[in-house]
Image (cartoon, rainbow, N blue to C red; front, side, top):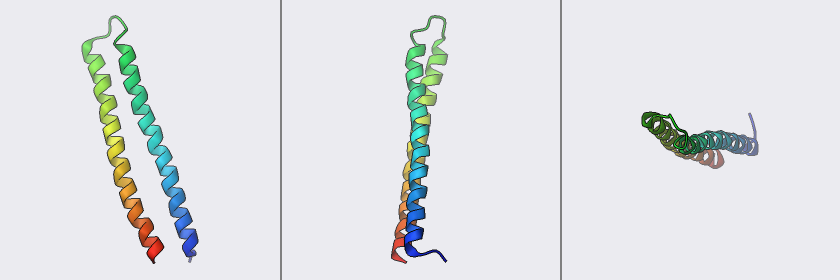
Length: 85
């Protein structure tokens, strides 16, 4: 069985790598939002396309933040259980 410190170290490393993944996904949503702003300056792009890009970016960001908050909460609970036991 792994030592107490090893379990905590693994959990913290897992939290760090998962946080990096959520940062990448959030960055993609922000980049899509910036692309949506750039699309508005292009002639011939319909208003529907502009709004579809903007709404998609906002939904991606909200979903990413909600999943990240849920993940952090669950990981924190797991980490505290590992520390206490």
